[in-house]
Image (cartoon, rainbow, N blue to C red):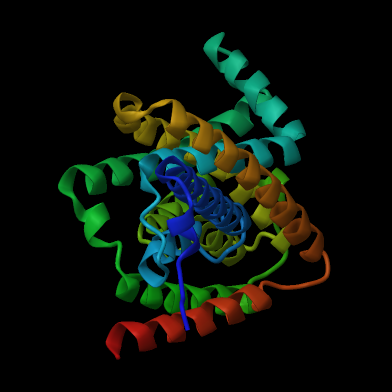
Length: 292
């Protein structure tokens, strides 16, 4: 029986166009998967950075690179700003008041609380970046242990923590403490939202208000990390990368907005236990992969 390859019946330029189209489809699929993972995990207490690191390690996808990291962060930033627009508007008004030397209003206080909570993670992030430790921590073993350990910590604190504080009780002492908790999120797999929610619950904030404070803290943190990455990728960006980044940002925005809306609604009746179960299962699975 005679067999043949369909490509052998095509002209060379048609073969090239077919392969280029196929590569482009795979690229779009990769962008979609990357953006959805970032969008869904950025605000859920299950670690977006951990999942992004795992994507190329556990699949055939190539590492997405820093340009895509910046793009998906912009998408998730847009989602949290839109969802908490009332608080964001107050913060912007507060920043304006601070620049005019007015520090006593509620808006100015909110802006100062967010600034105070962000300073520790910026300093720690720069240290890790300059020393190269940030790259050394990007491993399956590290993610496995942090997923497991900090998931269990979240469960214990959430179950035993009091429900006596709201966002109105947020003060500078708690802001500094949450800023120190947020530093731990620089370890892949910890989860920025997860660790700050853990800190808030440990201080006695309700689930909803703890999550709200955590989400507001994410805005300056995402902006700071995005600016840091942007400085490094500006010189390497091109039209194709910009277009792919825009597509990824849109996908990430939609996924993040859906995830954020769902989580905030569920917190009215559901604890953080479902996320803890997911973290523990993923942690044990990754430990098996890492040590087998």
